[in-house]
Amino acid sequence: MNNGVKFDDKHSITDWDLLMVSKNIEEAEPRINTIEIEGRDGSIDLTEALGAVKYNDRTLSFDFEIINPIDYWATRKSISNYLNGRKAKIILDQDPNYYYYGRCQVSDAENEKNVGRFTIECICEPYKMKISETIVSDDVVAEDIITLSNEKKLVMPKIETTGNIVFKFEDKQFSIAANETFQSPDFILKEGNNQVEIISGSGTLKFTYREGSL
Image (cartoon, rainbow, N blue to C red; front, top):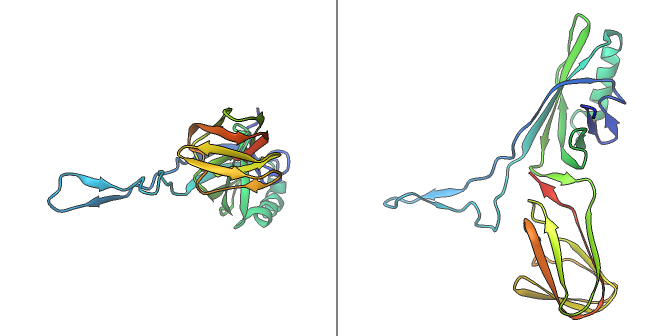
C-alpha cells in the first residue's frame, strides 16, 4: 500500500513524485455547549439540544519532500497553482474508501541541499465521507421490515419506489407514490441500524445515502 494522498484528481506520488514524510489528521472537536446558572450545582448541558452532537472543522496536514532538487521549483509551482486556496476531495492511500473535503493551503518552500520540503494544510469538514453511496434496494410488501445501517453522521436518504407504498419510520408514517423521488427532514438515519416498516403497498423500494464517519 502506498503512503500517498490524492487531492481531487492529482496524486502526490504518481502525479508529483512526492515523498510524504509525515501527516497529521486532527480529531473532530465536539462543540460543547453548557450554561452556568448561579446557585445551581453543575451546569446545564445543551450540547445535544438540536438532536445530535455537532463538530468543528478539522485540520489535515501533510509534510512532503522532493528528492530531485532540479525539479523542485517547477514541481512546487505546479502544486501551488493547482491546489493553493482551493477546496478539494482528499483521499489517503491508507484509507481509500473515504474522502475528506476542505480548503487547502501550500506552505512556503524550503530547499536545503538535495531535498526540498513543504507542507499542505487543509481545513476540512468534520466528517470523512464514504467514496461510494450506500444503496439498499428491496422488493417489499406489507409488514416487511427493512434495516438501514448507517455510520456516525446523520443523513437524509433519497427514496425511490416502483409502487404506491406507505411505510413507518420511528413514530411517523410516510406515503410515497410510484416513480416518485422522496426526501423528508422527518426521515433522518441515525448511527447504527434504522428500521423501516412497510404498512401497505408493494413494489421495489430503494434508499440511497452517503455515510460519514469521524
